[in-house]
Image (tube, rainbow, N blue to C red):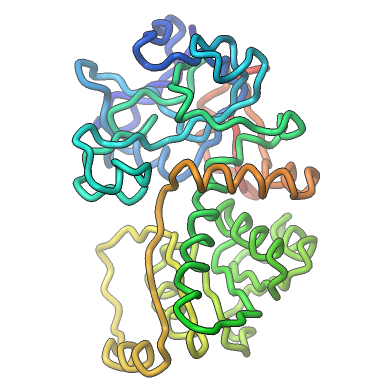
Length: 347
């Protein structure tokens, strides 16, 4: 079968393996036929050789952690042939740590977790893959064209879950949300904010293309200049990782505000910044800044519910390119106007 693979740690070793072995039954009881795989910045960093780890005993890593597939068989009877599913990316560590032991592998304490297509587990960019039922998330059949968005939606579902948990520390009636960055994570964060009835604002430097219209379709306001932001948001969801914008987000939140950082900075840059003033503001205004990454099964299920409630046309607009597997190299090349690029295993 066909699979998209790399040699971990070797930059630009991306290739299409036409005769990759069928998935080992030990990988899981559920056999899935791949429909689509989404591509994100993590994939590009692995292709660049920055990180990535093959499964034990192999020097090849199958890429792909944003999945969508159809069940072919499940020896446990949990799922039925034909069910639409996505595979949860992170698996609990084998020790396990206290968090992994209760299903909160997104909060793993010892770092021994594994991740499909990233760390120690083969990814989903292959024609067939296996997984255990506990790591397979069923999707509404109506999401067949957009269900590949479940993984990034799970990331923001977790972010919103934790924002709301922190918000319960005191009486809190948030109204205004600022999302920085209008990539897939930012737009999906805005979607979940709109579903909660908030006044949504999205900041992104892009002025053309589909992004402004996608935000307005949610009933939100789109900004391309920091100077346009003449308000103090109750909630900030930072989705860029751009150091200057991260710091600005921390400073911009209003009294009792919550800032969730989902973007990952590359590091290596120094900014002249008054850390003491930031500390003073955070303390005196009772503000909270926290980071959020990955998701556990509960968040994946929340994400599936959010996608089911969303406008299918709006979700489809996030997928700006669908590339057949045979043309895989084009899928990993940046093109102007890209939001979400998807490898299509059905073409």
